[in-house]
Image 1 (tube, rainbow, N blue to C red):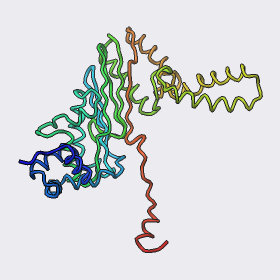
Image 2: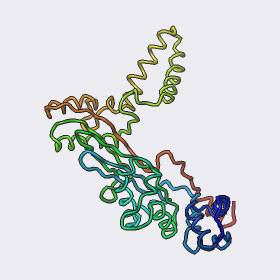
Image 3: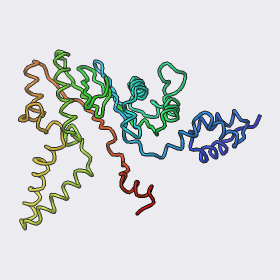
Image 4: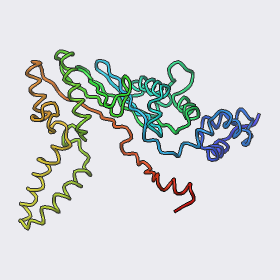
Length: 310
């Protein structure tokens, strides 16, 4: 039997775009014959899936689960919103999300996990779905949120099915107070996070580069005033605190539920009602496709090109 070398696997991967493990299996099944291995991959639908891997997948669904003190999110992308309405795709996202807690936010670990009810990995099931449905799909990211004492509340915006939608949020509240009341308040906070899209829980958690970028903008605007440098610096720091932080820091944002108090003030008021300290320990917000550069199609240009006109 032919020994399958790393260079042979690499060569087949480069020629087909298929994953390393599938390439190795194809070579083993065909005694190291590259051409036969390519045909084998095509017959399995894997090579077809690979050809779709360069397409932008920015649609799909965010899956959300939460139970008691733990919750998890997973984003699975596809090329079109049409696929998100496909029950087969929805079931797949729901099953993948169910495995996310054990993967602890490690996407590679989640891809390698055994898919529910099958002997295959999540990655293998995704590959099969690409070949079956005919669109590129990716498991983009996952996250887990937990507390030692308290609750993890969830919220799904633009819900298409239970636990599936366009925006998924988890909020972790640490408290020894009544769990049902905590959960109800936590869901209000999760709705706020979905709407207000905070970048961090506190100013200390903000990315330093992002703060410096904002500071530079405020500095340039303040320098135009012609005031002394020490005054300018105070103006800049004041604007960072009163404008920028209030826009992007969760605890400093205006709570969308009443439109008056800050989130921090709302938490303090809830503590009195609960008669127990409450700490917002963590939040995670996934918005479908955020940060993915989508291709903007010019439909008129496509029609003109098809018609052979300019």
